[in-house]
Image: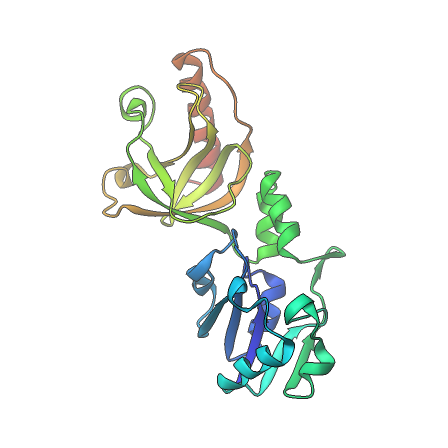
Length: 255
């Protein structure tokens, strides 16, 4: 059994280089926020064995190796900088005494190493297209529909207000071109000028889908950062801006 070991937060292109040479994943959960918990399973068909870092951080390298052997692992696939065990005292030389080792070189894009910390910075800065390029897939959050202000359907455009299911990294405040449950959409992330509250709300662009979504779980995939959040003094100005945003989004999707 070939096992890739790591945090795998993001399941990005660096992680995929390990995954494609493996039969299973040993995931060390460190409080991920790009693909928290089982969200990693959205991007692989391989079985995943999860360990919480807090449960294993005090194990000696030999104790951790013993756990791996119980999983019938014979080959370890990791990055060349992989360390393990208490105080990161275990290294590849020690692993090599117990398993066959496949150490993968760092994956780079435009000379930049593909790492979760880099992708987080892209997302926090609104550089969503860069983040997606390093991820190798679209950045996605999941949430449940909650009751909003009620202004959307009455005064503006109908929106679905989202309460996040997990501790996802929230992108930079602003308006994004998105897919919501695979439907073309426009998503606002930030503090609303209408009531001063933070919200994540999405507008489905395909008209016949607005009232036909039969679920309370929504998956929002971020495709492009459209504009920064603005404060509007009245609904008239907000309406005008929303119409401009929708036009740009429909042109993006060619709908």
